[in-house]
Image (tube, rainbow, N blue to C red; front, side):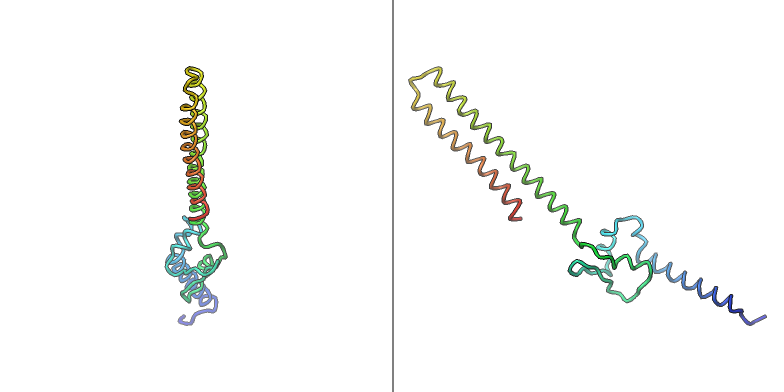
Length: 154
């Protein structure tokens, strides 16, 4: 019996199609099972980024390579990391303003204690207090400037 039945031919074609689709899946998309879609799609060499969309450069289209055609923001992961780093840096720079406030309080507290101990040095103590206040306030303003530079200039 050398002739093939239509059922056998249909089955052989189906097995061949499944095999080629499986090979294509293993070749292009097997890592997508283990990594997030953004990391998988952005790290594959056959994918190029456009303006907010992804497109396949190669002409092969299989059901498994349709994952790359999803529409999402291409640099969402890196943009989120950059934004988080900006906020952390700005928050750390803003802590310096609290140090400035503590410094101003210490300067005027020392002025009151010094005046209570020796009232005759009132003018000299007051000039030193104003100098300490100015230096402490300058450091606080410098910290705020760095925080705003981190947020808006980078």
